[in-house]
Image (cartoon, rainbow, N blue to C red; front, side):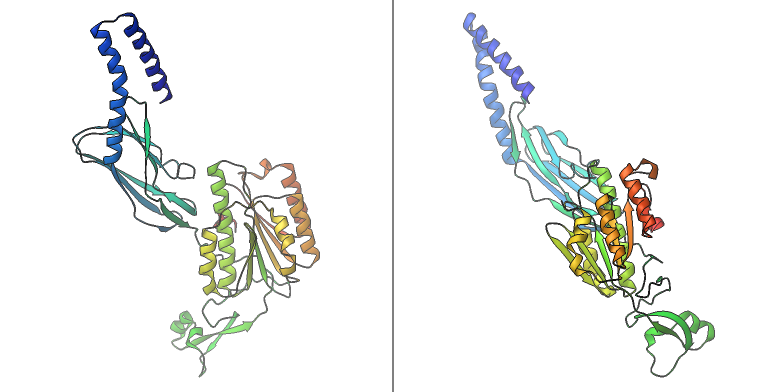
Length: 397
Protein backbone atom coordinates (compact mmCIF):
# COMPACT_ATOMS: atom_id res chain seq x y z
CA UNK A 1 0.00 0.00 0.00
CA UNK A 2 2.88 2.38 0.74
CA UNK A 3 4.32 1.76 -2.74
CA UNK A 4 0.94 2.52 -4.31
CA UNK A 5 0.72 5.79 -2.43
CA UNK A 6 4.25 6.80 -3.41
CA UNK A 7 3.59 5.95 -7.07
CA UNK A 8 0.30 7.84 -7.04
CA UNK A 9 1.95 10.82 -5.33
CA UNK A 10 4.64 10.95 -8.05
CA UNK A 11 2.01 10.72 -10.83
CA UNK A 12 -0.13 13.38 -9.13
CA UNK A 13 2.80 15.82 -8.85
CA UNK A 14 3.76 15.25 -12.49
CA UNK A 15 0.11 15.76 -13.53
CA UNK A 16 -0.16 19.03 -11.62
CA UNK A 17 3.08 20.31 -13.18
CA UNK A 18 1.77 19.46 -16.66
CA UNK A 19 -1.53 21.23 -15.91
CA UNK A 20 0.40 24.33 -14.83
CA UNK A 21 2.78 24.32 -17.81
CA UNK A 22 0.36 23.16 -20.57
CA UNK A 23 -3.04 24.73 -20.01
CA UNK A 24 -5.02 22.66 -22.50
CA UNK A 25 -8.44 20.94 -22.06
CA UNK A 26 -6.93 17.42 -22.34
CA UNK A 27 -4.29 18.12 -19.70
CA UNK A 28 -6.89 19.75 -17.43
CA UNK A 29 -9.15 16.68 -17.77
CA UNK A 30 -6.17 14.50 -16.80
CA UNK A 31 -5.54 16.67 -13.74
CA UNK A 32 -9.19 16.55 -12.59
CA UNK A 33 -9.16 12.79 -13.05
CA UNK A 34 -6.15 12.52 -10.78
CA UNK A 35 -8.01 14.54 -8.15
CA UNK A 36 -11.41 12.82 -8.24
CA UNK A 37 -10.31 9.22 -8.90
CA UNK A 38 -9.02 8.59 -5.32
CA UNK A 39 -12.24 10.11 -3.93
CA UNK A 40 -14.37 7.77 -6.06
CA UNK A 41 -12.15 4.84 -5.06
CA UNK A 42 -12.54 5.73 -1.36
CA UNK A 43 -16.33 5.99 -1.62
CA UNK A 44 -16.53 2.66 -3.43
CA UNK A 45 -14.42 1.05 -0.69
CA UNK A 46 -16.78 2.40 1.99
CA UNK A 47 -19.75 0.95 0.10
CA UNK A 48 -18.04 -2.48 -0.05
CA UNK A 49 -17.33 -2.23 3.67
CA UNK A 50 -21.01 -1.55 4.39
CA UNK A 51 -22.33 -4.45 2.30
CA UNK A 52 -19.74 -7.17 2.98
CA UNK A 53 -21.00 -10.24 4.91
CA UNK A 54 -19.19 -13.40 6.05
CA UNK A 55 -19.76 -16.54 8.11
CA UNK A 56 -17.46 -18.92 10.00
CA UNK A 57 -18.05 -22.26 11.69
CA UNK A 58 -16.10 -24.93 13.62
CA UNK A 59 -17.61 -28.42 13.85
CA UNK A 60 -16.02 -29.39 17.23
CA UNK A 61 -14.98 -27.45 20.31
CA UNK A 62 -13.43 -30.30 22.32
CA UNK A 63 -11.23 -33.00 20.83
CA UNK A 64 -8.41 -35.30 21.87
CA UNK A 65 -4.89 -34.96 20.55
CA UNK A 66 -4.57 -36.52 17.08
CA UNK A 67 -8.15 -35.80 16.01
CA UNK A 68 -9.17 -33.27 13.35
CA UNK A 69 -11.56 -30.35 13.24
CA UNK A 70 -13.30 -28.78 10.27
CA UNK A 71 -13.29 -25.00 9.90
CA UNK A 72 -15.49 -23.31 7.27
CA UNK A 73 -15.64 -19.67 6.37
CA UNK A 74 -17.33 -17.89 3.47
CA UNK A 75 -17.60 -14.35 2.15
CA UNK A 76 -20.73 -13.18 0.31
CA UNK A 77 -21.21 -10.50 -2.36
CA UNK A 78 -24.94 -10.05 -2.85
CA UNK A 79 -24.60 -7.02 -5.14
CA UNK A 80 -23.86 -6.86 -8.89
CA UNK A 81 -20.62 -4.98 -8.43
CA UNK A 82 -17.19 -6.47 -7.90
CA UNK A 83 -15.46 -6.38 -4.54
CA UNK A 84 -11.97 -5.43 -5.75
CA UNK A 85 -9.59 -6.44 -2.94
CA UNK A 86 -10.38 -8.29 0.29
CA UNK A 87 -7.71 -9.53 2.72
CA UNK A 88 -8.56 -12.08 5.42
CA UNK A 89 -6.24 -12.75 8.38
CA UNK A 90 -6.86 -15.73 10.68
CA UNK A 91 -6.14 -16.68 14.25
CA UNK A 92 -3.59 -19.45 14.55
CA UNK A 93 -0.75 -17.79 12.63
CA UNK A 94 1.14 -17.40 15.91
CA UNK A 95 0.63 -21.02 16.99
CA UNK A 96 1.46 -24.51 15.79
CA UNK A 97 -1.56 -24.27 13.44
CA UNK A 98 0.05 -21.55 11.29
CA UNK A 99 0.51 -23.96 8.37
CA UNK A 100 -3.26 -24.09 7.93
CA UNK A 101 -4.17 -20.45 8.36
CA UNK A 102 -2.23 -18.30 5.94
CA UNK A 103 -3.67 -14.91 5.01
CA UNK A 104 -6.04 -14.84 2.03
CA UNK A 105 -6.29 -12.04 -0.55
CA UNK A 106 -9.18 -12.20 -3.01
CA UNK A 107 -11.55 -10.30 -5.25
CA UNK A 108 -15.21 -11.32 -5.32
CA UNK A 109 -17.42 -10.94 -8.39
CA UNK A 110 -21.04 -9.85 -8.39
CA UNK A 111 -23.51 -12.31 -6.87
CA UNK A 112 -20.60 -14.52 -5.83
CA UNK A 113 -19.88 -16.47 -2.67
CA UNK A 114 -16.42 -17.78 -1.82
CA UNK A 115 -16.14 -20.65 0.66
CA UNK A 116 -12.97 -22.11 2.17
CA UNK A 117 -12.94 -25.49 3.91
CA UNK A 118 -10.06 -26.36 6.27
CA UNK A 119 -9.41 -29.81 7.72
CA UNK A 120 -7.12 -29.10 10.67
CA UNK A 121 -5.34 -31.98 12.36
CA UNK A 122 -4.52 -31.10 15.97
CA UNK A 123 -1.33 -33.01 16.79
CA UNK A 124 -0.65 -31.33 20.12
CA UNK A 125 -2.64 -30.53 23.20
CA UNK A 126 -3.58 -26.92 23.80
CA UNK A 127 -6.23 -24.23 23.83
CA UNK A 128 -6.43 -22.69 20.37
CA UNK A 129 -8.19 -19.70 18.87
CA UNK A 130 -9.75 -20.55 15.51
CA UNK A 131 -11.41 -18.14 13.12
CA UNK A 132 -11.08 -14.80 11.39
CA UNK A 133 -8.91 -12.30 13.22
CA UNK A 134 -9.28 -9.40 10.79
CA UNK A 135 -10.84 -8.54 7.42
CA UNK A 136 -9.42 -5.63 5.45
CA UNK A 137 -11.29 -3.99 2.57
CA UNK A 138 -9.06 -2.11 0.09
CA UNK A 139 -9.95 0.35 -2.66
CA UNK A 140 -9.23 -0.49 -6.30
CA UNK A 141 -6.28 1.92 -6.44
CA UNK A 142 -4.64 0.32 -3.42
CA UNK A 143 -4.42 3.64 -1.57
CA UNK A 144 -6.81 3.05 1.32
CA UNK A 145 -7.68 0.18 3.65
CA UNK A 146 -10.36 -0.21 6.29
CA UNK A 147 -10.79 -2.95 8.88
CA UNK A 148 -14.14 -4.71 9.23
CA UNK A 149 -15.60 -5.58 12.60
CA UNK A 150 -15.26 -9.33 13.04
CA UNK A 151 -16.97 -11.89 15.25
CA UNK A 152 -15.43 -13.36 18.37
CA UNK A 153 -13.01 -16.22 17.64
CA UNK A 154 -13.96 -19.86 17.99
CA UNK A 155 -12.08 -21.74 20.71
CA UNK A 156 -10.96 -25.35 20.40
CA UNK A 157 -9.64 -27.32 23.36
CA UNK A 158 -7.34 -30.20 22.44
CA UNK A 159 -7.03 -32.64 25.33
CA UNK A 160 -3.84 -34.67 25.82
CA UNK A 161 -3.81 -38.42 25.47
CA UNK A 162 -4.23 -40.57 28.55
CA UNK A 163 -1.40 -43.10 28.55
CA UNK A 164 -2.16 -46.03 30.89
CA UNK A 165 1.11 -47.08 32.51
CA UNK A 166 1.57 -50.66 33.65
CA UNK A 167 4.39 -49.71 35.98
CA UNK A 168 6.04 -46.59 37.36
CA UNK A 169 8.99 -46.75 39.82
CA UNK A 170 7.24 -45.44 42.95
CA UNK A 171 7.93 -46.75 46.46
CA UNK A 172 5.60 -47.54 49.36
CA UNK A 173 6.19 -46.42 52.93
CA UNK A 174 8.51 -49.36 53.53
CA UNK A 175 10.65 -48.49 50.52
CA UNK A 176 9.37 -51.39 48.40
CA UNK A 177 8.53 -51.06 44.69
CA UNK A 178 4.82 -50.81 43.98
CA UNK A 179 5.00 -53.26 41.09
CA UNK A 180 1.99 -55.48 41.91
CA UNK A 181 -1.14 -55.03 39.82
CA UNK A 182 -3.64 -52.88 41.66
CA UNK A 183 -7.40 -53.22 41.63
CA UNK A 184 -9.07 -50.18 40.06
CA UNK A 185 -12.75 -50.74 40.84
CA UNK A 186 -14.59 -48.87 43.56
CA UNK A 187 -14.20 -50.64 46.84
CA UNK A 188 -10.58 -51.55 46.14
CA UNK A 189 -7.75 -50.14 48.20
CA UNK A 190 -5.49 -53.15 48.34
CA UNK A 191 -3.15 -55.21 46.23
CA UNK A 192 -4.35 -58.27 44.36
CA UNK A 193 -2.68 -61.24 46.06
CA UNK A 194 -4.70 -64.49 45.59
CA UNK A 195 -7.93 -66.05 44.36
CA UNK A 196 -10.41 -67.96 46.56
CA UNK A 197 -13.94 -69.40 46.26
CA UNK A 198 -16.95 -67.22 46.96
CA UNK A 199 -18.07 -66.86 50.61
CA UNK A 200 -21.50 -65.54 51.55
CA UNK A 201 -21.31 -61.76 52.08
CA UNK A 202 -18.54 -61.09 49.52
CA UNK A 203 -19.04 -58.10 47.25
CA UNK A 204 -19.75 -58.92 43.62
CA UNK A 205 -17.27 -56.18 42.68
CA UNK A 206 -14.45 -58.52 43.70
CA UNK A 207 -15.44 -61.40 41.42
CA UNK A 208 -12.59 -62.68 39.22
CA UNK A 209 -14.67 -63.23 36.10
CA UNK A 210 -12.04 -65.04 34.00
CA UNK A 211 -11.33 -67.59 36.72
CA UNK A 212 -15.07 -67.93 37.41
CA UNK A 213 -15.72 -68.82 33.77
CA UNK A 214 -12.87 -71.32 33.81
CA UNK A 215 -13.87 -73.15 37.01
CA UNK A 216 -17.63 -72.73 36.60
CA UNK A 217 -17.98 -71.33 40.12
CA UNK A 218 -17.68 -67.90 41.66
CA UNK A 219 -14.04 -67.04 42.39
CA UNK A 220 -13.13 -63.95 44.37
CA UNK A 221 -10.06 -61.71 44.40
CA UNK A 222 -8.35 -61.70 47.77
CA UNK A 223 -6.87 -58.36 48.71
CA UNK A 224 -3.81 -57.56 50.70
CA UNK A 225 -3.76 -54.18 52.42
CA UNK A 226 -0.82 -51.94 51.72
CA UNK A 227 0.36 -48.61 53.00
CA UNK A 228 1.41 -46.26 50.22
CA UNK A 229 3.43 -43.14 50.67
CA UNK A 230 2.28 -39.76 49.45
CA UNK A 231 3.34 -38.80 45.93
CA UNK A 232 4.15 -35.19 45.03
CA UNK A 233 4.04 -34.29 41.34
CA UNK A 234 5.91 -31.15 40.23
CA UNK A 235 5.44 -29.73 36.73
CA UNK A 236 7.82 -27.11 35.33
CA UNK A 237 5.76 -24.41 33.55
CA UNK A 238 8.58 -22.02 32.68
CA UNK A 239 8.89 -20.61 29.17
CA UNK A 240 11.25 -22.20 26.67
CA UNK A 241 13.53 -20.21 24.35
CA UNK A 242 12.82 -22.18 21.16
CA UNK A 243 10.58 -21.62 18.14
CA UNK A 244 6.81 -22.15 18.30
CA UNK A 245 6.87 -25.69 16.92
CA UNK A 246 9.63 -26.99 19.19
CA UNK A 247 8.12 -25.32 22.26
CA UNK A 248 4.74 -26.86 21.49
CA UNK A 249 6.20 -30.36 21.16
CA UNK A 250 8.13 -30.03 24.44
CA UNK A 251 5.11 -28.68 26.33
CA UNK A 252 2.94 -31.44 24.89
CA UNK A 253 5.32 -34.15 26.15
CA UNK A 254 5.53 -32.56 29.61
CA UNK A 255 1.74 -32.49 29.94
CA UNK A 256 1.37 -36.07 28.66
CA UNK A 257 3.93 -37.28 31.20
CA UNK A 258 2.08 -35.56 34.02
CA UNK A 259 -1.27 -36.96 32.83
CA UNK A 260 0.17 -40.49 32.61
CA UNK A 261 1.77 -40.45 36.07
CA UNK A 262 -1.22 -38.85 37.81
CA UNK A 263 -3.60 -41.31 36.12
CA UNK A 264 -1.40 -44.22 37.23
CA UNK A 265 -1.45 -43.00 40.83
CA UNK A 266 -5.16 -42.21 41.07
CA UNK A 267 -6.20 -45.38 39.24
CA UNK A 268 -4.32 -47.28 41.93
CA UNK A 269 -5.76 -45.20 44.81
CA UNK A 270 -2.42 -43.58 45.60
CA UNK A 271 -2.78 -40.07 47.12
CA UNK A 272 -1.08 -37.31 45.14
CA UNK A 273 -0.41 -33.62 45.36
CA UNK A 274 0.08 -31.83 42.05
CA UNK A 275 2.17 -28.68 42.57
CA UNK A 276 2.95 -26.02 39.97
CA UNK A 277 3.45 -22.28 39.70
CA UNK A 278 1.74 -19.84 37.33
CA UNK A 279 1.04 -16.49 38.93
CA UNK A 280 1.20 -18.11 42.35
CA UNK A 281 1.95 -21.49 43.88
CA UNK A 282 -0.91 -23.89 43.11
CA UNK A 283 -1.61 -27.24 44.79
CA UNK A 284 -4.13 -29.86 43.72
CA UNK A 285 -4.76 -32.84 46.03
CA UNK A 286 -6.49 -36.06 45.01
CA UNK A 287 -6.83 -39.63 46.27
CA UNK A 288 -9.35 -41.52 44.12
CA UNK A 289 -9.72 -42.16 40.39
CA UNK A 290 -12.92 -40.14 40.17
CA UNK A 291 -10.86 -37.01 40.97
CA UNK A 292 -8.79 -37.50 37.82
CA UNK A 293 -11.31 -35.79 35.52
CA UNK A 294 -10.89 -32.38 37.17
CA UNK A 295 -7.11 -32.71 37.21
CA UNK A 296 -7.13 -33.78 33.55
CA UNK A 297 -9.13 -30.69 32.58
CA UNK A 298 -6.76 -28.48 34.57
CA UNK A 299 -3.72 -29.98 32.84
CA UNK A 300 -5.29 -29.51 29.40
CA UNK A 301 -5.56 -25.74 29.82
CA UNK A 302 -2.25 -24.97 31.53
CA UNK A 303 0.00 -22.40 29.86
CA UNK A 304 3.77 -22.41 30.06
CA UNK A 305 4.24 -18.81 31.11
CA UNK A 306 5.72 -19.09 34.60
CA UNK A 307 8.80 -17.06 35.48
CA UNK A 308 9.62 -19.21 38.52
CA UNK A 309 12.09 -22.07 37.97
CA UNK A 310 11.21 -25.58 39.16
CA UNK A 311 13.82 -25.56 41.91
CA UNK A 312 12.17 -22.44 43.38
CA UNK A 313 8.75 -24.12 43.24
CA UNK A 314 10.17 -27.10 45.18
CA UNK A 315 11.63 -24.74 47.77
CA UNK A 316 8.31 -22.86 48.12
CA UNK A 317 6.43 -26.10 48.76
CA UNK A 318 8.79 -27.26 51.51
CA UNK A 319 6.20 -26.92 54.29
CA UNK A 320 3.66 -29.07 52.41
CA UNK A 321 5.82 -32.17 51.99
CA UNK A 322 5.81 -35.34 54.02
CA UNK A 323 8.98 -37.21 54.97
CA UNK A 324 9.84 -40.37 52.98
CA UNK A 325 7.48 -39.54 50.15
CA UNK A 326 7.68 -39.95 46.37
CA UNK A 327 8.77 -36.79 44.56
CA UNK A 328 8.20 -36.78 40.78
CA UNK A 329 9.74 -33.83 38.94
CA UNK A 330 8.74 -33.30 35.30
CA UNK A 331 10.81 -30.68 33.52
CA UNK A 332 12.59 -29.65 30.33
CA UNK A 333 15.34 -27.73 32.16
CA UNK A 334 18.07 -29.37 34.25
CA UNK A 335 20.23 -26.93 36.22
CA UNK A 336 22.62 -26.89 39.17
CA UNK A 337 19.88 -25.26 41.24
CA UNK A 338 17.57 -28.20 40.55
CA UNK A 339 20.33 -30.62 41.56
CA UNK A 340 20.72 -28.86 44.92
CA UNK A 341 16.99 -29.17 45.62
CA UNK A 342 16.97 -32.85 44.61
CA UNK A 343 19.96 -33.48 46.86
CA UNK A 344 18.07 -31.92 49.77
CA UNK A 345 15.05 -34.13 49.05
CA UNK A 346 17.22 -37.25 49.04
CA UNK A 347 18.72 -36.26 52.40
CA UNK A 348 15.18 -36.03 53.80
CA UNK A 349 14.61 -39.66 52.78
CA UNK A 350 12.42 -38.91 49.77
CA UNK A 351 12.33 -41.13 46.70
CA UNK A 352 12.95 -38.78 43.75
CA UNK A 353 12.08 -39.43 40.11
CA UNK A 354 13.15 -36.86 37.49
CA UNK A 355 11.42 -37.02 34.11
CA UNK A 356 13.52 -34.90 31.77
CA UNK A 357 12.07 -33.93 28.37
CA UNK A 358 14.98 -32.91 26.17
CA UNK A 359 14.78 -30.46 23.25
CA UNK A 360 17.39 -32.62 21.46
CA UNK A 361 17.21 -35.97 19.71
CA UNK A 362 20.43 -37.28 21.27
CA UNK A 363 21.99 -37.03 24.74
CA UNK A 364 25.30 -36.05 23.17
CA UNK A 365 23.72 -32.80 21.95
CA UNK A 366 22.97 -31.67 25.51
CA UNK A 367 25.03 -28.84 26.98
CA UNK A 368 27.71 -29.56 29.55
CA UNK A 369 25.61 -28.37 32.50
CA UNK A 370 22.77 -30.75 31.67
CA UNK A 371 25.09 -33.72 31.14
CA UNK A 372 26.98 -33.15 34.38
CA UNK A 373 23.77 -32.67 36.41
CA UNK A 374 22.22 -35.86 34.99
CA UNK A 375 25.35 -37.83 35.88
CA UNK A 376 25.32 -36.37 39.39
CA UNK A 377 21.64 -37.28 39.82
CA UNK A 378 22.41 -40.91 38.92
CA UNK A 379 25.06 -40.97 41.64
CA UNK A 380 22.41 -39.83 44.15
CA UNK A 381 20.36 -42.93 43.26
CA UNK A 382 17.72 -40.69 41.72
CA UNK A 383 15.56 -42.35 39.06
CA UNK A 384 16.21 -40.30 35.90
CA UNK A 385 13.91 -40.85 32.91
CA UNK A 386 15.37 -39.27 29.79
CA UNK A 387 12.98 -38.46 26.96
CA UNK A 388 14.48 -37.22 23.69
CA UNK A 389 12.69 -34.81 21.36
CA UNK A 390 11.70 -37.63 19.00
CA UNK A 391 10.77 -40.13 21.73
CA UNK A 392 7.18 -41.18 22.42
CA UNK A 393 6.10 -40.77 26.09
CA UNK A 394 4.33 -44.17 26.24
CA UNK A 395 7.51 -46.00 25.18
CA UNK A 396 9.87 -44.11 27.50
CA UNK A 397 7.66 -44.11 30.60
